[in-house]
Length: 293
Image (tube, one colour):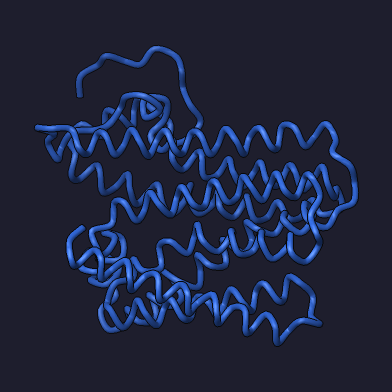
């Protein structure tokens, strides 16, 4: 590991340790409040700590692990608060498997605080003097809100006394399949990027990337929909918590994937063919066209 990466990992580690401490302090001060309010306030406190670090080091990517780390703390909070039954333990285990793998995947591919995600670089360039506000609200607080909404079904999963039922099975299976799909997509993408002689204009259309253009995002969305199904099995009256999975779908469908598609169209001439042949998310297993671009 290079000195820069070691220093960067130390910065991230200290930042998230301080963020956790801030979340615990705020949560403890609201111990009599509704758990959703406690989680929201703790989430906000942790986000502001990470924002301060990203602004200080001029690297908004310091926030990136928050997406996969915050649900670990939120799920853990619910289990500690309720004691946890078999359903709760299974969901907790799946959330932790998903979160730890995704966090490790980010850290493995991150070169350090000298590297900022290209989307943040573009926002920094386009917003100019307004970037501090864009950074706070657009890069930090808004995604934290999405994560908070996605975790709403944990309330039903962790607090229900209803025994395991038939609807739990598809929900849990979707969560397992989503984790496996996202892991396979990330591994294939990493192998593709490390292929000797690969050109920057090459496109990835093999393995799960031959099913759809964004299998990693399909897996990500599947996790939250599966969690909602488990919540529906545990507490049908909390059907409205599906707003979390729906909001994450909106994020990927209308914000994240259009940005990536536009970038690839500019940088990879063959990507237009891929957009004709492959859907964004729902896999198409029929024979693909051999038409040249």
